[in-house]
Amino acid sequence: MEERENMAETIRAYFFGISYGEIVNGKQVGLAGFAIPDLGIIFRSRFKGNIHECQYAGLLSLLDFIENNKKNLSAYKFEILSDSALVVHQIAHRKFISKELTPYFETAIGYKGKIDYRVTWVPREENIAITGMDSTPSYKADIKLNLEIGRRSLDNIRPS
Image 1 (tube, rainbow, N blue to C red):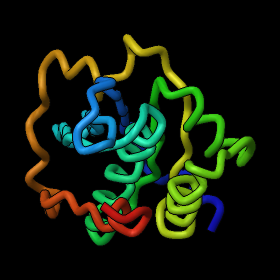
Image 2: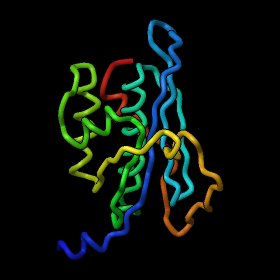
Image 3: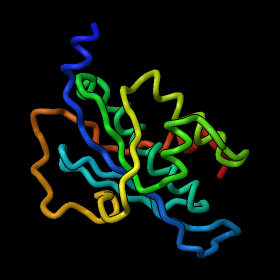
Image 4: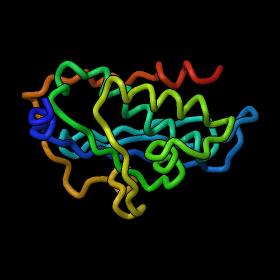
Protein backbone atom coordinates (compact mmCIF):
# COMPACT_ATOMS: atom_id res chain seq x y z
CA MET A 1 0.00 0.00 0.00
CA GLU A 2 2.85 2.39 0.84
CA GLU A 3 4.33 1.85 -2.62
CA ARG A 4 0.99 2.85 -4.23
CA GLU A 5 0.87 6.02 -2.11
CA ASN A 6 4.39 6.99 -3.19
CA MET A 7 3.38 6.53 -6.82
CA ALA A 8 0.39 8.89 -6.63
CA GLU A 9 0.82 12.01 -8.70
CA THR A 10 0.87 15.25 -6.73
CA ILE A 11 -1.17 18.23 -7.84
CA ARG A 12 -0.21 21.66 -6.56
CA ALA A 13 -3.06 23.92 -5.51
CA TYR A 14 -2.96 27.42 -4.01
CA PHE A 15 -5.38 29.35 -1.81
CA PHE A 16 -5.63 32.91 -0.55
CA GLY A 17 -7.86 35.26 1.36
CA ILE A 18 -7.77 39.03 1.75
CA SER A 19 -9.87 41.47 3.69
CA TYR A 20 -10.53 44.93 2.30
CA GLY A 21 -11.25 46.43 5.70
CA GLU A 22 -14.59 47.65 4.33
CA ILE A 23 -17.52 47.01 6.69
CA VAL A 24 -20.90 45.97 5.24
CA ASN A 25 -23.79 45.21 7.60
CA GLY A 26 -21.36 45.03 10.50
CA LYS A 27 -18.97 42.53 8.86
CA GLN A 28 -15.67 43.01 7.07
CA VAL A 29 -15.68 42.24 3.35
CA GLY A 30 -12.94 40.30 1.65
CA LEU A 31 -12.07 37.92 -1.11
CA ALA A 32 -11.23 34.21 -0.94
CA GLY A 33 -10.10 31.91 -3.67
CA PHE A 34 -7.91 29.17 -5.01
CA ALA A 35 -6.06 28.07 -8.12
CA ILE A 36 -5.19 24.62 -9.43
CA PRO A 37 -2.78 25.37 -12.28
CA ASP A 38 -2.44 21.71 -13.34
CA LEU A 39 -6.18 21.67 -14.05
CA GLY A 40 -6.44 25.23 -15.40
CA ILE A 41 -8.80 26.32 -12.60
CA ILE A 42 -8.97 29.67 -10.81
CA PHE A 43 -11.76 30.48 -8.36
CA ARG A 44 -12.47 33.74 -6.51
CA SER A 45 -15.45 34.79 -4.43
CA ARG A 46 -16.40 37.57 -2.05
CA PHE A 47 -16.48 36.57 1.59
CA LYS A 48 -17.49 38.34 4.78
CA GLY A 49 -14.87 38.02 7.48
CA ASN A 50 -11.54 39.22 8.78
CA ILE A 51 -8.28 38.39 7.01
CA HIS A 52 -7.84 34.99 8.67
CA GLU A 53 -11.46 33.98 8.13
CA CYS A 54 -11.06 34.89 4.44
CA GLN A 55 -7.87 32.83 4.24
CA TYR A 56 -9.59 29.84 5.78
CA ALA A 57 -12.52 30.39 3.38
CA GLY A 58 -10.07 30.08 0.47
CA LEU A 59 -8.68 26.81 1.86
CA LEU A 60 -12.13 25.39 2.65
CA SER A 61 -13.46 26.31 -0.80
CA LEU A 62 -10.50 24.46 -2.33
CA LEU A 63 -11.01 21.40 -0.12
CA ASP A 64 -14.74 21.43 -0.88
CA PHE A 65 -13.98 21.53 -4.62
CA ILE A 66 -11.58 18.60 -4.30
CA GLU A 67 -14.08 16.59 -2.26
CA ASN A 68 -16.89 17.32 -4.73
CA ASN A 69 -14.61 15.90 -7.43
CA LYS A 70 -13.18 13.09 -5.32
CA LYS A 71 -14.32 10.40 -7.76
CA ASN A 72 -12.11 11.83 -10.52
CA LEU A 73 -9.29 13.18 -8.34
CA SER A 74 -8.87 10.27 -5.92
CA ALA A 75 -5.64 9.12 -7.60
CA TYR A 76 -3.91 12.38 -6.69
CA LYS A 77 -2.22 13.81 -3.63
CA PHE A 78 -2.51 17.55 -3.10
CA GLU A 79 0.25 19.91 -2.10
CA ILE A 80 -1.64 23.01 -1.00
CA LEU A 81 0.36 26.22 -0.91
CA SER A 82 -0.44 29.64 0.52
CA ASP A 83 1.19 32.81 1.76
CA SER A 84 -1.02 32.66 4.87
CA ALA A 85 1.57 31.90 7.53
CA LEU A 86 -1.06 31.63 10.24
CA VAL A 87 -3.35 29.15 8.45
CA VAL A 88 -0.45 27.05 7.14
CA HIS A 89 1.11 26.91 10.62
CA GLN A 90 -2.18 26.00 12.29
CA ILE A 91 -2.98 23.21 9.82
CA ALA A 92 0.57 21.83 9.67
CA HIS A 93 1.24 21.91 13.41
CA ARG A 94 -2.28 21.93 14.90
CA LYS A 95 -1.32 24.70 17.32
CA PHE A 96 -2.38 28.17 18.41
CA ILE A 97 -5.94 28.21 17.14
CA SER A 98 -8.03 31.09 18.44
CA LYS A 99 -11.62 30.53 19.52
CA GLU A 100 -12.96 32.43 16.47
CA LEU A 101 -10.91 30.31 14.03
CA THR A 102 -11.51 26.94 15.71
CA PRO A 103 -14.57 26.03 13.56
CA TYR A 104 -12.60 26.79 10.35
CA PHE A 105 -9.60 24.82 11.60
CA GLU A 106 -11.70 21.83 12.65
CA THR A 107 -13.44 21.77 9.28
CA ALA A 108 -10.09 21.85 7.42
CA ILE A 109 -8.69 19.07 9.62
CA GLY A 110 -11.88 17.08 9.03
CA TYR A 111 -11.00 16.96 5.32
CA LYS A 112 -7.75 15.13 6.16
CA GLY A 113 -9.73 11.90 6.48
CA LYS A 114 -11.17 12.39 2.98
CA ILE A 115 -8.37 14.05 1.01
CA ASP A 116 -4.63 13.34 0.91
CA TYR A 117 -3.24 16.86 1.35
CA ARG A 118 -0.52 18.79 3.07
CA VAL A 119 -0.09 22.54 3.35
CA THR A 120 3.08 24.52 2.72
CA TRP A 121 3.89 28.20 2.97
CA VAL A 122 5.06 30.17 -0.09
CA PRO A 123 5.91 33.87 -0.44
CA ARG A 124 3.00 36.05 -1.61
CA GLU A 125 4.58 36.64 -5.02
CA GLU A 126 4.60 32.86 -5.61
CA ASN A 127 0.97 32.36 -4.62
CA ILE A 128 -0.64 31.77 -8.00
CA ALA A 129 -4.13 32.07 -6.49
CA ILE A 130 -3.36 35.78 -5.93
CA THR A 131 -0.99 36.62 -8.77
CA GLY A 132 -2.82 34.58 -11.41
CA MET A 133 -1.30 32.25 -13.91
CA ASP A 134 0.94 33.65 -16.63
CA SER A 135 -0.74 31.39 -19.11
CA THR A 136 -3.71 29.37 -18.07
CA PRO A 137 -3.24 25.78 -19.20
CA SER A 138 -6.03 24.06 -21.03
CA TYR A 139 -8.67 22.49 -18.87
CA LYS A 140 -7.95 18.77 -18.74
CA ALA A 141 -11.09 17.46 -20.41
CA ASP A 142 -10.06 13.88 -19.70
CA ILE A 143 -10.72 14.54 -16.00
CA LYS A 144 -14.45 15.07 -15.53
CA LEU A 145 -14.93 17.72 -12.84
CA ASN A 146 -17.92 19.27 -11.14
CA LEU A 147 -17.17 22.97 -11.57
CA GLU A 148 -19.90 24.13 -9.21
CA ILE A 149 -18.05 25.40 -6.15
CA GLY A 150 -20.02 24.56 -3.05
CA ARG A 151 -20.05 26.65 0.08
CA ARG A 152 -21.41 23.89 2.29
CA SER A 153 -18.35 23.70 4.47
CA LEU A 154 -18.42 27.46 5.03
CA ASP A 155 -22.18 27.61 5.61
CA ASN A 156 -21.85 25.08 8.44
CA ILE A 157 -19.18 27.07 10.26
CA ARG A 158 -21.13 30.12 11.25
CA PRO A 159 -24.56 31.62 10.70
CA SER A 160 -24.93 34.32 8.03
